Image (cartoon, rainbow, N blue to C red; front, top):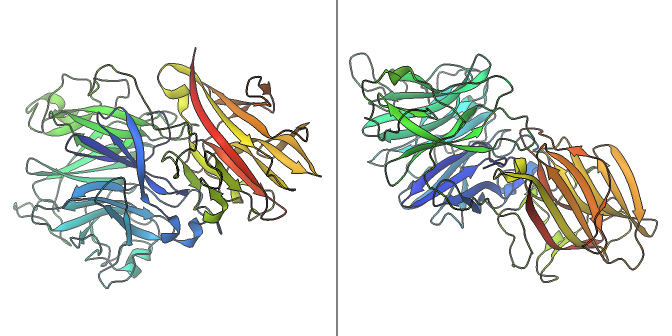
Length: 545
């Protein structure tokens, strides 16, 4: 899926697959996607409806979580409920969100330590839960300071408490003798833990840095905490040993190596690994890849080009015990034929609620947008940014992911167009179509009202290109971004929806602060909380060569 769905994790529940992705500072938080075939996905909701429940820095009043906010989580189905565990990196700490239905409503809770104190801790990431058959619960996570390696905690069955956690110890730098669970793998730079129990063996996945690139690693044992030399099970505070294999290879520093992700088994017993292409630095962020899994000597090897074999016992005795997968070159899909489809893009704003492909840049100011004040339109009301003229401190920007390479289905370009009514604009207001990333770069084609007149303006970071004035009787305008396969955007405008005129400068879409490019709609007013625009529709189309 050629867009920025980073840090994926997934499960199968009956015939349905559910996947989550990191969302950082975007609201709502933790995207939840659904598929029937592991190939075609749709966004169905979010596990965190209001980011301010995590912390005030994520709201429009502060907008202080670019490059931070909600990091990699894990999704599981247990005891008739969906569970999503995640962390917010800069001190908000550990959270769990649960729902009976993956579309919501979701109930968010702050996790607590053994003494009942909120687990508001710094620099922990990538939690993953695990329940034994008797309901005993555990949580794996990594501390991204000091011993940057996987820890395994004992957890209450309801996910509310880490039973061997101490919030003070977890906030201190370096290893501690208590209060941080049990270190189960002592190699630094290890994170992205996932826990599976397959045919009586425990498999603990993580990734780590080797020779400058991240690689996928797997540990396995007959006991969750490993096995001691005498065959006795490891236990909290006294872990045993694991067998360890590298199961996915690293690539060169500029390559898009697979690493973080999750295993899933189909109803027919086929295994796959969904991963993001993890190096980053590309305009489309960290897209998703689906890797077929081959079991060799009881090890799951994603992306290995060998004859398919299903199940952990397949391939026993083969020379593949040292095999390393991770090939993004392709493989057999779990479905054949059919039209590829991607999460929703276009929107006519006819519904009473936002379509789930949309997210806000930080939690929005709720009373400054509406889908009901003017039916069939999105009304965005303007208000002052936190810093005058600063797009990245202006609240209520609505956005969705940009699809790379024109959509991955052979197309060579993507065309994004919005139709906007500008009759409600006030002095000092600016509004339009914008590309932006995680707080570093942006480009926008806009209408600005200044000196009683409205005119077009293009801005590429600090470079501003003034455009023509609009006549007083102009009520509607069409704004467009044409993105080619090289991720170059060229903007256009139209006064009738038919004839489009080039305007502005070419802009190379950019990666920034661990986010690929987003495209969306914005407005703000440096002079006051006044003025509005009405968006009739937003169209996302692919064009073939």
